[in-house]
Length: 165
Image 1: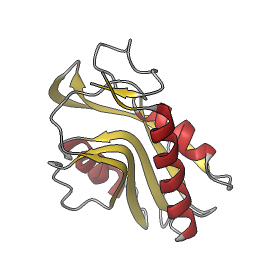
Image 2: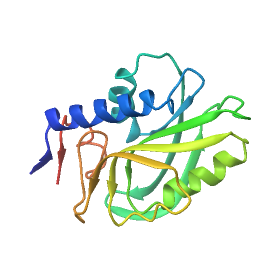
Image 3: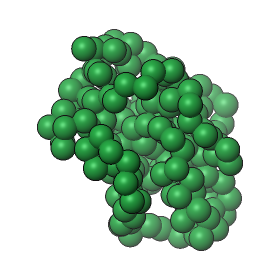
C-alpha cells in the first residue's frame, strides 16, 4: 500500500533542501556523506534540489538484515580530510537512532566541525539524543517501509518512486 506518493515526496524533499540552503546550513563548504544503499535514492533527489556543487562521498553502514535489526556493519569508502569541515549525512531513514549515533561516533574520529543528519523519513519514536537531525517526513507508524531507497525485501523493493508499507 502506497503511504507517500511521488508528488508528496518530491515536495517534501525540495522544501527541506531549499530551507536548509536558505538558512545557510548547506553551502559550498559542506561535505555530503551518503549512507548506502538506502540513502542513495534520497541523496540523488535531495542534491538535485540544490544550486550548489558539493563534494559527495559514500559509506556503507547498516544494522538491518531484511526487516530484522542486527549487528552494525561499517565499511567506509575513501573519506576526505573532514577536520574542521561541516558534514551532512544523507540517509533514507532514522528509525531507532542507533545507526546514526554509531556513524556520528565514527565520524567524530575525523574531527569535523559539525555533523548533521538529513533523512527522508524519521519515526516519532526515534531516540535522536545527541543528533542534529532534519527529516523530510516524520511518521508515527510502526510499519516497515519500502521504496525510495528503503528495502523491505532484500533489495528488490528499493527503487519504487513512492514509499509503501
